[in-house]
Structure formats: C-alpha cells, structure tokens
Amino acid sequence: MDSPQVLAQRHRCVSIGTSFFAGSCLLALTVCSTALAPGGRTRAGQSPIKAEIHRTFPLTKFYDTPRPLPAGEPGELIRKEEFEGYDLPPAVVAIRFLYHSRSAGGEDVATSGLILYPDSNAPAGGWPVIAWAHDLNGVARQCAPSLARNLPHAPFLAMYLNLGYAIVATDYTGLGTNFPSAFADMQSNAADIIYSVSAARAALPQLGPRWITIGIGEGGLAAVAVAEMEGELRDPNYLGAIVVSGMEDLRDRYERPAVSPLLFLAYGIKTLYPDFNITGMLTDQALHLYARIEQTCGDITGTRLSASEMLKADWEDNRRVKEYLDRNHPGETRAFGPLLVIASESDPAVPISKVSGTLARMCKRGDLVQFQTYGEADSGSVIGVSVRDQMNWIQARFAGRPASSNCSDVR
Image (cartoon, rainbow, N blue to C red):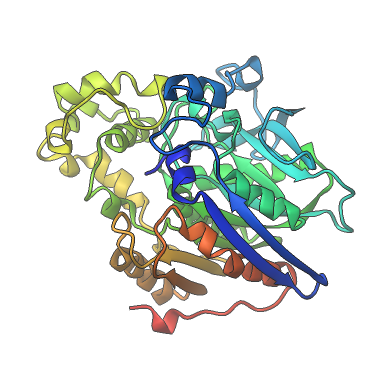
C-alpha cells in the first residue's frame, strides 16, 4: 500500500496520446507529478513534516455530523460546499459533499466526498460520470482524499476531466466524517461508491445518469464489489468498472504483511465487528502503536517491529479475522456489467499469479472481463501506461458498444 506521495514519485511523468474519432479530436499531453523531489523533500527544501502540513487541509465543521445521525435514505445529500483550494487546473470546479450511506451492518452513516467537473456548459444529457475508488492510506479522519491539497492521482483526474467526464470521488466512511472506518472492506467501500453517485447528482444536477467506476489499489476491490452489488441493484445506468492494480484477494495481500496495514486491518475488523477483541490479533508491542492510528496517515514511523513481532501466532485463526478476510474475496458473486482489469506483470508487490487466480474465479462465474497486462510497469506507473486502453474502454461504454472478454486466455 503506497501513499499518494510515493505514487507521485513513481510516475513523475507519463506521456499520453489518445485519439477520439467519434469526438473528432486528438489529445496529446504529458502528465507530470511534482509533489516531491527525490529523498522525500519538496523542491523548495522544506522538511517532509512542514510539507505535509502544507499539503493537507484541516478538518472543519463541514465534515462533522451528530451521532446518532438524523435519518436519511442511502444516497441522500446532507450538504455541499464549493471549494477552491485544490491544486487543479483553473478550468476545474470542485464541490465537497456529505451524504447518507450504509455500513456493512446496515447502520445509517455519513460519508464525505468530492465532485470535480469542467467549468463549462454540460453536454446534452449531463456530464458522464466516473466514480473514483481511491487506494488506502490509513483509517484516520484526516486521511480523506478530499482534505489533500494535491489530490491523489490528480494528473489523471485532470486528464479525465479534460476529456469531458465528471469525477465523483467518495472518501469512504470514516475518512473525513466522524464515523469509524471499515478500512479495506470491499462491500462497505462499494456501498459508499454507489450511494455517492446518487448524492452527487442531487448536489450537481448537471451530472448525467450514466456512470462507470475506476478503482486504484485497494479501491480496485471496491470497484469489483460495486459490480457484484449491482448484480442485485441492476442500475441500468451503471456501465462497468475498471480495476487498476487492485485485483489481489485481500487474504493474499496479507500473506506479505507490513506494519501499518496490519494495524489498519485490525481497526477495520473492529469497525465491522464491534465484539472483535484486538488482543487476539495484536501483541502488546503492537497495541501501543494501534493507539496512534487515528492520529496519522500512512506508515506509522518510529518503530522497528517486524510483522511477526506484532501478530499473535494464530491471528488468522481468529473467528472475526476469518470472517473479514472471507467477505473480501472477489468472485463469490456474479458481477453485473463488464470489467477492464489492468495489472503489471513485473510488480513483486502484486504477483500476477494472484491476480490471475482471482480472475479465473470470476470468469468461471461468467463475468465479462477484459484482462490487460503491462510488462515494464509497476503498481505505481501502470495507471499511466494503460491510459490509452482505459480511454478506449470508457469511450466504448458510454457509446453503448458491446464489451469484449478474454476470459478464455486467463489461467
């Protein structure tokens, strides 16, 4: 799991050339990230701590809601505000919004998010919508992407906007709002994505009804869960999902545990199952660090503990741990709508064999999957090298063309 800053360093510049014959235009641009110079320092020589203060906005009363929350239907708008502080092109308008979502236990929760759209007249039928599912950087309220001055993957968001799409980006419940985060629970995050689209239309009527979702990193599992939940909802305006470097099963991911994600995982399990006793998973040394995770994002520094020093020997045998990992197992439910799955062949952090295993399970269920791999890309840069394939796929969905599948090639 990489922070937005690490990802920015990984794909500093990506050249993109995309042709759109239906729109009679040719786009050629270079997407560059300049958030950090090598060594984790800003180009102005600021320390990383001072730069972090500069890069994030404080939580304000806008994000606060009473507990219990006054009742509302899922997808109902709570409030909105236009916000001008992001490092985005001047032709982009940003709206923060709060809305009603549902936790995995069915609780009415408040969730925050962000709408980005071009500062121009909407096309006939409204702006086509990309629902953005971000990767994860912690469970603290201040980890909400809508609090970042330089939004995660901002160059790519700007590219989609420049091509005539609007972005609806949920923060996920608990990031931003004062509710606990379920962390990597794909079903909880998928509910936040689905309901964000309805609330965004209430906040901005110029949004069109049709939408797709794009999931990055851990957001990829949420994008798959959106497709699987739509198997029941059957929203005719949902057109499909793109998964970028996020198809790995959650259980496989934690075969290679790292310090901070393990703490976040324990927090997510506790959110989903309040009766979960974290002492059955974490050692006394880890519990000291666990107390800090609601105050910081990314890696919790200042520790030399290994994963084996943090985890009880039989942690995966805990009933609640098993239930959490089992429910984050894509391919157990038939997906609705096509999927484009993008992965790196050479990234050791996300072995292609694990991705292929998940895809084989989905294909066996009859899901319509197009699987694209890229040899030299890692999980940070594959989003850039796959842009042409992304845009061709997105354009085809909104044009109503049939989606293709290469499930017969998946091993």
